Image (cartoon, rainbow, N blue to C red):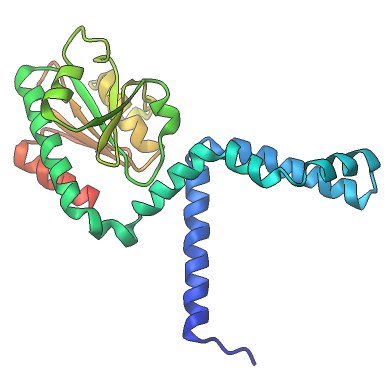
Length: 245
C-alpha cells in the first residue's frame, strides 16, 4: 500500500508547477527550436552508445565536460526570461499589485493623450508569454513608462511611430514592432491594419493590446482575439485592471 504524506503532495505539486512553467516558456520563445536540436544531439549520442559507434562515442566523451557550460551559454537569454516569467507568475503577482496600478494609470493617461490628439497607436502589454520574436522586429528600448515618451514615440513622422510598443515588466522594452495580422473573417472589413495587428498578437499570446484609431479617435482593447471598442477613460482603466490582475 502506497501512502502519501503532506510533503509528498507538496513535492508533486511543485514539480508539476515548474514543469508547466518550463513548457509554456519553451512554447512561446525561440528556445523550442534550440531545444529540439539539443535533444537530437543527445539522442544521437545515445544511439552511438547503444550501437557502439566508436567515432561518435569518442566525440561525446571529449565534449561531456563542456555540455553544461554550453547549455547555459546557448540558453542564457531564455533562462533570464524564464526567471522573469517565474517572478510574474500568479503565485507571486500580489507582490507587484501596486506597481501594476501605477503602470496602468500611466498607460491610460498616455492613451487618452493620443486619443485627444488624434494619433494612432498600438500598445502591447505582455502577461505570461514572452514576445522576444516580436520585440526583435523593432528597436530595443529599456525605458520607464511615461505619458510623454509614449506620446513622442507615436508622433507622426517620428522614426518609431509606425509599429507597436511592447510593455514588459513595467518598462517599454521595444518600439516600432511588427505584429502578426489577424486573418479571421469574422472581424469585419471595416477594421484597418492597425486593429488587425492589435487583435493578431492576442491570438498567438496572452498579451493585451491597446489600440487608438487615428481616423475615429476611438480607443479599443484586444485580448484573446476579441476586441472591446469605444472605451472611455474610466472603462479603459477598469478593463485593464481586470485583465492584468
